[in-house]
Amino acid sequence: MISSPLMTVMVDAVRKAAKGLKRDYGEIENLQVSRKGPGNFVSAADRKAEEVLRDALMKARPGYGLILEESGNIEGQDKSHTWHVDPLDGTTNFLHGIPHFAISVGLERDGQIVAGVIYDPAKDELFVAERGKGAYLNNRRLRVSGRTDMADALVAYGSPYLGRGDHPKLLREVAAVMAVTGGARRFGSAALDLAYVACGRSDLYWERDLQTWDIAAGIILVREAGGFVTSADGGAEPLAARSVACGNENLHGELVKLLRRANA
Ligand code: IPD
Ligand code: CA
Ligand code: CA
Ligand code: CA
Image 1 (cartoon, protein in one colour):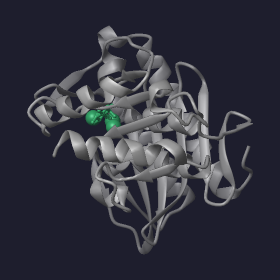
Image 2 (cartoon, helix red, strand yellow):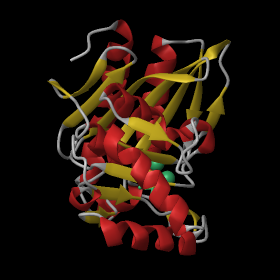
Image 3 (spheres, protein in one colour):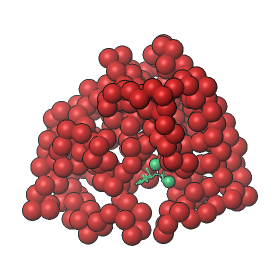
Image 4 (cartoon, protein in one colour):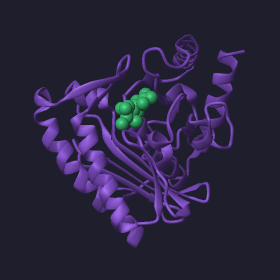
């Protein structure tokens, strides 16, 4: 585990918000749900968890800015620090009673992600990483998978909501990946998709049309676990591109090449 004042702030905030999520998950049929766009839902659980996170982070680090999925941006006096907060990543899974969703909090300092926490309340799995201090799942140090052969690789991907992003392009990419790898999966939480690469469950993951709160924490997790993260096009700034391709050193380049060829 990482013991630092920053990690304590992040883990305490996330655990506090998770209590409400667990309660709400037990009674999803009573939750107030509204639609932000086609196929894109938000519930009272997302909003309540975000309030808890916002209050805890603002109290512990008053000057930092926040980028929050449900309530927008809050500017801080300290221009060099920004939290990226997704109070419930995998809302669709959550609302369908599928126990695969997470809270994700990442901290950006001067353009670089320096710490990330992703918590999966249904499985009680806490993923944490801080720059230079490694990545952990509960108390276990993480390392990306060591597979070297695409034919053995399990590859996760994500697809944007109805009416957003380029679905035909994604289908070309998925077909290309399925033709040469051990399996393709769409789990439904970008934060956990990144965390699963960090802990070696998935070998690779890619997705486009994301937001910074989906990926900020996961990017540092994968990097601190020894993995490579770029944008889906292979660019060096996934956070700015709001897209990711990640995996171990052996296979990451293969994935990026495969995606490029699928679109050529
Ligand atoms: C979504 C999930 C999903 C991804 C979508 C995200 P949300 O986040 O991470 O896996 O494919 O692009 O928007 O809305 O459940 O927080
Ligand atoms: Ca959402
Ligand atoms: Ca999300
Ligand atoms: Ca969300």
